[in-house]
Amino acid sequence: MRLLTFLVPEETPAGPATVQCTGVVIGDDVIDLTDPAVGLPAEMDSLLGMGEEALERAADAATSSARRFRLDEVQLLAPVPVPPKVLAIGMNYRAHAAEMGRELPEHQYWFNKQRTSVIGPTEDIVVPAVSEQVDYEGELGIVIGRRAKSVPAERWLDVVAGFTVLNDVSVRDWQRHSPTFTMGKSFNTHCPMGPWIVTPDEVGDPTALSLRTTVNGEIRQDATTADLIFRPAEMIEYLTTVFPLEPGDVLSTGTPAGVGAAFRPPRWLRPGDTVRIEIERVGVLENHVVAEVPVAPPPEPVVDDRR
Ligand code: MN
Image (cartoon, rainbow, N blue to C red; front, side):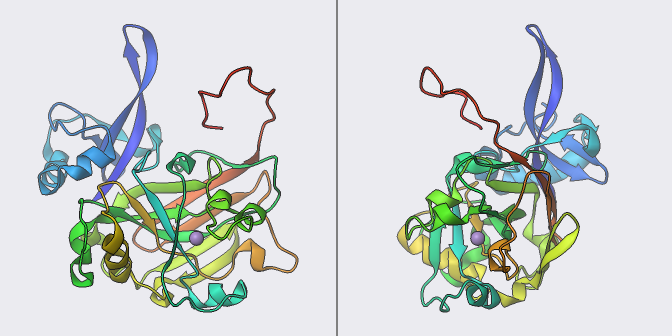
């Protein structure tokens, strides 16, 4: 099953508006899970938090009278537009650690991406005015489906809702400002995610998937998740030793070799570029790159803070 979050235009008493829905993909169609015939929430983290019951209702929606749209006539958002947490692991492919001149990690090296950096598959990656060193990192994302602490490795799949494609966009000079990576990993728009969540039954072994990243059609990363150093089972055991994972949390599992920083000279993303990440049995995530549009300093603290 493929679950997603999307916007549709809707007439309201106040005039035209867009409304957010959750959906399930059936062929070329998406079925609206917020339709009263199904009655699921418009927020994916709430839907996932309902557990098996929600997934059964989503699966049954295919044969319900719920409204459906053509997939190409809705605007996809990130499958979880505002995840409770976004955590990413660094140096988790041997060849990537080597190209970055780093030792193989003894422990799992986790950092967080601020959840405000999440965008969907139709939104643009913005090159911020403060840096030119913007890089792509194609990664397999894990979406958590159940609140859990202290999960043994062998029970990792119990807490997983599914998999998605994630671009861990990184601003390399800001990344090096501090050992935690957080600043260089959290610029607005620097966590593209999507196009949907694919449930584990359709993905099979997540450590046997091909992953390919292209920039303007040129192959930059061509790898398999079989080369992961730490695997999803170990990740979930390690993280939940310390804190609970919750429905809608996103874990990004690391990037293989071929990032722009590893080229001599480096090949940074530039306005006008298109980054495409394809992961076998999960999907394709494609985003365009644009320049930050300079704005006059705001007279008051910024409230509309998406750019
Ligand atoms: Mn990464």
